[in-house]
Image (cartoon, rainbow, N blue to C red; front, side, top):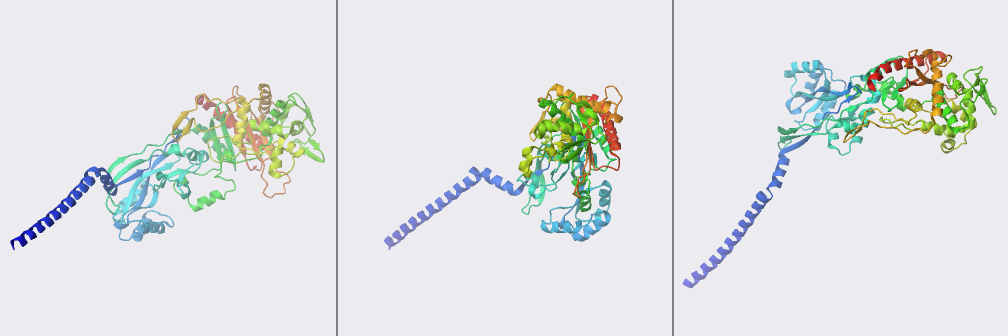
Length: 601
């Protein structure tokens, strides 16, 4: 009996020891695991817990300012009031919106849009009802707040262009990010964030955006914000200083506003700074930042004078007689003709069975280069173009900046067209004809240029340098701004004698009796102008949509600036009267420029 109990006790003891050892191992493993999780891995799990509790949110940075050369603000950020609704705080969303619509005008379709947005989001997430409230509207909503449960008025920032249409084509505008523009940058996904869509706003968008700020907020399991823990404001974008002179820009716009459709460019011939660039008619860029209506958009798109297009860089037109300066230089540089060589103009030139007329029906008689520019004799250029050929003319045109993009810091610049024999063979599959050279020599036919290209051509003739136009005073890049000071342009590789001859002819146009621009001369010493006017016409065109006549004038002004003006379509004036009007506008813009030059340069 005693032995049996002793065996049973030993068995129990062994089992107890084994069970105790198992429990000890289990507790040791559990303690080790707890030590690992709470001590060794504490930082990791603290971070995971914080990520569940703390939400990191981006804050949109203030967009950089844009100013003119003297510091006048052209694009700024203004305070923008907007109204939002929180679904869980209002018993009836539609009823609240209907009451709000009686207090301030919400516009068509807004109530339906808000109802759709509210249904897609959590009940505590605010939904924007309307942006850009005036202070009067804010006050009215505030007074009626007891009747508008769930509505919140918040303040933000929106882009504003104080000059409105005056600088629409150069500044451009900002608008909401489209789905195609999303590239993975979280800043672009922020509600209400805007980016540059055209003009300087688009070209320097990255530099103007700035760096986003951050906000740390504590949220519950549903994502509701409980409190803000930390906030770091973003860095404002760079300030972009343009070469434009606001006063001169206003004046150019004011003079062009009397025309149906027109464009003007004013440039410093020494450094390529564009002092004014106007395109008429224009549009108000503020309409795009606040959300343009379908009615206004359709009126802009269907306007036959293309207010959305910057004619200075996007419009290509036949340059007419302003192209003769290029042909004259091509002839002199070829060595085939001289400036004193004369050709007889009897009012036309026959080539095969075709007759090419001069604008002056009775002809100009014997004409040298100086008088050919002064009187704008077409037959003279027919003669020399036959001798030098289209390819030499094209090479000189390219050297003067025609037929290729100037590189101006604006989007969608067009290159125009300077034809050659090879171009026609490749593009049209036809051989070049001699008569086409004659037509091209007076800036018509296939020849197409932009107003900016003609202004660049004039600046290069005046300076002898390969001047390139630009709209900002400094080099602007996403990572910073660097100075353009002491930037030099290469020599044109055109002899000074040839340039002097052409400049002399341009001087004769406006300062010698019977010059085509003589009636608009400026009889003030030191303020004389020199230039060339041109007329492009469509005659006997079988096309019902043939382009109307286009008038140009380019000039150098007191050795400092180049100006190009394009008016289209032709108002109901005789050609001579139109030339006088053009030159008077040019002279007026030149007079306005001169006082500014003493300050600017």
